[in-house]
Length: 333
Ligand code: P6P
Image 1: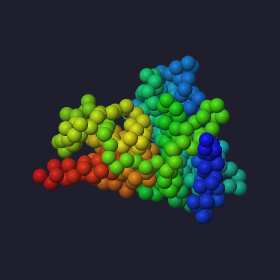
Image 2: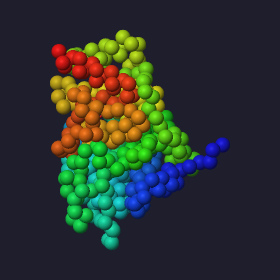
Image 3: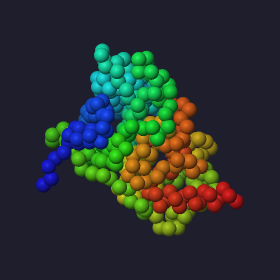
Image 4: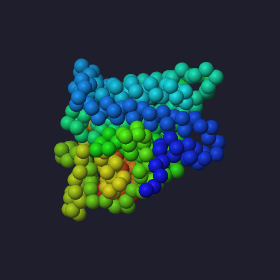
């Protein structure tokens, strides 16, 4: 039986990938792992304690009704990031503005973290997988002063690390620091994330396409034709309605996840900063692709505001190539 390699051990070992690493990123990733374990404990018993249901009808900056578990997850990640001393600012889906973090005396932290504490939270009450998504950037502003908005409005190509936690049949933490993608499964008996999926590579092709078919008539013609083509090719529709879960499936089994623009979401529904960019970084690192429905590379999009929306097509490279050909054909007519 292979020796257990915990997330902490793996992160420390891989710190050597960064010749100038001074351990800050290592500390930050480990603290995110701790927060994930704490959130996992509550997600797994959401039905048992009174944290279900909407947090008395509050709405977050996305206008979505906020479930109590959203608030709990947000709080726990912030607590852990604050205690790390490695993070000088946070941008969360749950906050309208970014949150500067006061430095620990005699320490100048150089990273900011963007995150969606509990994506897909509308599924909590029906026991469907939900996920945390995070991205880490080096701050750009003067380290001697408080973080500025420019530290959070960086393109995805500048991400230093990105990852997600999938609270599903088991709890998985998948992350990249730009040297491939690795997955860790939480072993509740020892309370550790253990290396379970080393050097994840996304299949070139897949048998699944993932889109909210309910919006079919609201999509542009090229999207509708591509969806028809998927169906004609015998691909199977799988749509969980939880972005992390849908993309996680594609990462392992191949496939494509689409969220085109609709009349309700003319710029797309999903958030660029703390949903699309981190997941695009992970998928590209695993050999996949991530573009907008206007064929721009997600990671190169200019970030103009924290809660900016984007359309997205993300998944197996051969399937994205094919979608590109469809869009080019229909938009060149
Ligand atoms: P729709 C969940 O609310 C979420 O932000 C993503 O996790 C998911 O992919 C998407 O929205 C689902 O949106 O409009 O299909 O319900």
